[in-house]
Image (cartoon, rainbow, N blue to C red; front, side):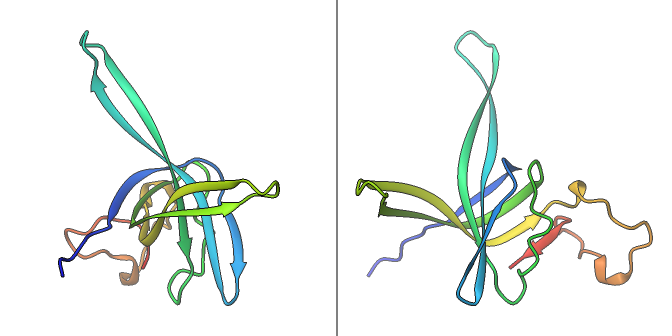
Length: 134
């Protein structure tokens, strides 16, 4: 049997404050994430295109604090694409696509950090700075 891959990696800004819900013993934060692409059109004019992604981040032992997730914050998300369907209140079938995050890093450049950081805040060389959810 051949292996398949379902992996997506996004770096963008949160579009609105997340909706945080409780599902059993877990919590989930749902938000939209904007990614931007810059390109030149046929006439050589620089254009920007924004793509919006629906993202969900489930809590775990390391991800119970969603307080850093706010509108405008730059986040790096690694996860998988999930397609789902449901029936709305009128009985119509609806479809949606979302990225279910398996890892997320809130970029440190968004956060006011204390000046005197202890060794617990130091990142190993080569790693991106930020607040990670795994």
